[in-house]
Structure formats: structure tokens, C-alpha cells
Amino acid sequence: MKAVVITKPGGPEVLQVQDVEVPQIKDDEVLINVVATALNRADTLQRKGSYPPPKGASVYPGLECSGIVEAVGDKVSRWKVGDQVCALLSGGGYAEKVVVPAGQVLPIPAGVSLKDAAAFPEVACTVWSTVFMTSKLSAGETFLVHGGSSGIGTFAIQIAKYQGARVFVTAGTEEKLAVCKDLGADICINYKTEDFVTRVKEETGGKGVDCILDCVGASYLQRNLDSLNIDGRLFIIGFMSGAVTEINLGSVFAKRLTVQAAGLRTRSPENKAQIVHEVEKIVWPAIAAGKVKPVIYKCFSFSDAAEAHRLMESSQHVGKIILVP
Image (cartoon, rainbow, N blue to C red; front, side, top):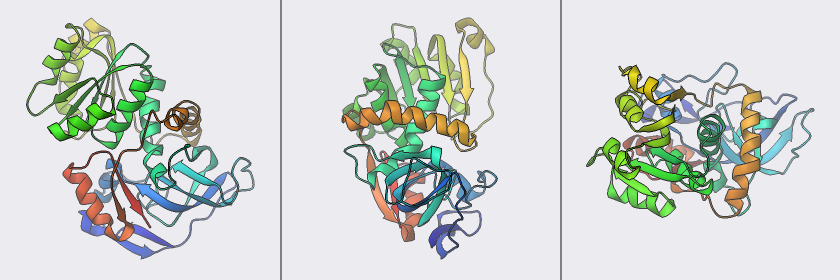
């Protein structure tokens, strides 16, 4: 089969399509013929050599895919050859075939094309596991997502609105903010022209928001704490500005704040299966009802993977970038 290989750590140019061996399937796994995969920031970090795959995972990038089941392991009962599915991966999406534990496989949501479904597994599982399963965002609460026009952001806006939250976003251009508004964001803040802490306080009567999802890290940490309401929850899923900073613990103490951080990739298969189960049960009906839609910016072929990575690192895109074999 063909796969996009990281030939050595470096820039986008190190990505090359090569002939590689088809992965071997285990008893509890499904072999998927990949129709599409989607880019994630983690892919660019892996390419640079700073985010290696977990032990036993595919060495090729790609944390999600959609496709058609080609084979199932002896212990797999739910899926059968020919099923159209999408899946949350630990790696290997940038290949013509990938194996994945059966518990991380999802049906294609009603009303979504097989190709477009590749845009959902990683964002749905990330947002649901962090904002809802852990931070317990509930109807009537206020929620701030940084990078509102990203793949994570465009999904988070829609599902948070569906769950009854008031949604705040930050983004760096008026065009991106307009997209966020169209997706349902209530308060749109251009972080380049105004201070999000001040605006959040203004819009909440001085209280702050109940929950924040942050991919920025160090430079935003104290400002995020300052933006939270009493009993507020901050969930960190990225460190785009770095991982080391200094904060005033007094604000955490005085407002009973919770700060948590986690990724998806290194979680156990059992934990991922639990997240995937909840996503299918709660998020998939929202998609089927048209309340949450895939937001796809551009589609590239495997041979243009380097160009796709350049686009992601430019941050000019809105929503997801898709790759097809």
C-alpha cells in the first residue's frame, strides 16, 4: 500500500509517498480501506520529531480517518466487511489502509458523506472528552474556546450551542470571526485588536466564563484564569505559545478554579472506546439533526501532503483540512 512517510524530522518537505507494508490485523481490530483522513496540529509536531507515536502505534501520521471495512479480527462482532465507517486513530491515517481497535470505530453520521466524515472523529472525541466528560459544561453556562475557526473550534462552537451553552470565541481576523458567528458563537473577540479578558468580563457582568478550552498554553494561562467565573474550569489541549510560565495561585484559590490538561493519543484503548461510545450516543444524533456540520476548508491528495501541512502551519484555514489517497 502507499503511505505518507516522514522521511526524517523537519519541514513539510520531508513528507513523501512511499510503498509500505499493509498493517497486520489483531483479534480485536478492524482493517479500514482509507477514503480520507484529516490533518491535526499533532501531525505537524510528529513531522518535526517532537510528538512520536505511542508504543505499538503506526509510525505514519494521521489521527482519524473514514473508509470502508476490509477485514475484521476474530473477536470483532459489531463491524463487518463493507461497512462504511470513520475512526479515531493513534496514527496511520496517512495511508491507504489502517488497523484500529474495534472500540474506536464509528458509523458514518447520517447526512454526512463518507469523505467528509473524516473531519469528525478527532475533534468530536477531543471536545466531548474535555469540555463535557471532564469539565462538565452544562446548559445555561458560558464557554470560551480559543482558536474558534480551527477544526476543534468550529466543532466546539456547534456542539456547545447544541448543549445549551453561551459561546465565546477568539480568532485573529474578522473573516474568521464571521464564520464563528455563522456557526452559532454568541460573542466573537478579535484577539489581535482587543483584550479577551476585558471583553469576557464586560459580557458576563464581571463574573467571567464557566469553562475555557485552550490550545495556546503559556502566554494565555494567567489571562485564562482571570477570565474564569467562580468554580470555573480551564482545559488545556495545546501549547502553541509554550509550556512554561508563571501564574498567581491566588486567583486559583480565591475562585476555586480547576485547571486540567490532556490529549487523546496516549489514552488507553479502553478509555478511547468509552469516549467514542459517548460521542456516538450524544454527538452523532446532533450531526444527524443538522445541528453540527463538518467545516472543511480544503482537500489535498497524499502527494500534496507537504502543501497541506504548510497550509495548516500558516493558520489561514478555517475548519478542517482533508487528505485523500
